[in-house]
Amino acid sequence: MTAERLDSLTSWRADWRGLRVAVLGLSVTGFSVADTLAELGADVLVVTESADEEYARLLPVIGAGLHVGPLDAVPAALIEFAPDVVVASPGFSPQHPVISWAQQSGIALWGDVELAWRVRDKVVRADGRPAEWVLVTGTNGKTTTTRLAATMMQRGGLRAAPCGNIGVPVLDAVRDPAGFDVLVVELSSHQLWYLGLQSGPDPLSPHASVCLNLADDHLEWHGSFAAYRDAKAVVYQHTRVACVYNKSDAATRLMVEEAEVVDGARAIGFDLGVPGQSDMGLVDGILVDRAFLEERSTSALEITTVADLAAQGLAAPHVVSNILAASALARSLGVEPHDIRAALSDFALDPHRIQIVAVAEGVTWVDDSKATNPHAAASSLAAYPGAVWIVGGLLKGVDIGALVAARGAVAKAAIVIGVERTEIVAAFARHAPGVPLFEVDHAETEDVMARVVELAADVAGDGDVVLLAPASASFDQFTSYADRGRRFAQAVTDRIENGKAPRDRDHPAEDAPGQPGTV
Image (cartoon, rainbow, N blue to C red):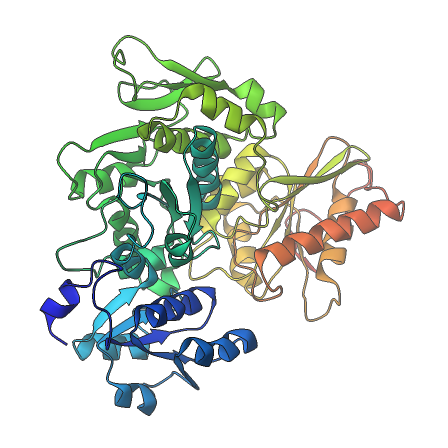
């Protein structure tokens, strides 16, 4: 396959027939890739370690082949297939043997997002152009910001679809026969790493883009923080109108400064301070826009107020930041402030994101199971200082010491769960030795969350908060962060319904401060 042939494949209407494509992985993303390529007439082989029964049944129906087996080495079936292109699902890291083989063999390596961009003109708008793309990434807040931006755009009269890492593959949105004006695409660092490999005459060029923040995460996948940072920075490449960045996070500003953007693209900052020109920010509790109005040197437009957001449960500082970022994306497409305000009036956070699951006997129980890394947990702990903190799981190669030093020292107590408890307990010993600490060993406890809630109830008193903000992935003990959050909420509900109230402040838990107790 010549480079010229691949460079010509930049439209749904291009000639994809006979292109030999190996698709790695058969999750929802892998199937969307296989289905798209089969519809285009390509010769498709899906290669996966395991196959969902339904997807495996559908592959021969759409005309795609399937190889299931170990991938710790390149399977002979893949070598014999001799693909022109390998399209990898986001779970395949740069160090994976099949990815290394493809790169060393000079085979074109794409992700699902690059394929979606190449065929984005399957359904066009009334003006004959495909939907605009708006890209959202960051260590934390991606899904909330993606949903916020799409909701604001919809309220402003645009047909906007949230897609990508949020759960709906970009290819499914591109192929939706209804068509859209805007695709708001949440991108993980994994997807952005693959996007950074793209070459050819038509690179992805979004209308607007944002990196919300940057902190240690997924280091085991990328290999280093520098590689993780470089992947995130890809989000700004070739942006045409607005590069939205976090003024409180210098790394995101540097990404914008270093990005190759289209002439005329503007840098739009946001934070919780008073905004400068071309910024979004706060003035006396009012969220304002000083970026998208002609008189921005002397005036600003009101978006909403922190008081109004508080009534919606949206006033946590990191949520307000997400709202400002989403507002900037929406304003870049002409959505009016009153439409943004209306969209916010009935917006609710997804479950397991600083969600109050119960208030009983003066104790507030908060589920932020989605806080799967230290940066996200730091935001939760900032919103609830002095909480009884439930922490632990899979750390993904990230050092939790800085979080414990910055936020853990003011916790009323900490309850440590998960298989990597040793690192967390050691961090408390170094940085917060006075905090009462309890370990729950899942190997010795049949119902982890029931025991966690029992311990938390013993420690918490009137006016306290019990906060599930694990700062870790969930797959050591639970099927997902959502499963972890549901089990926590159920354990809280069960305890309340059984009439067991938290222990009074004057009756501390049995373990002395700073002395870990393993359950």
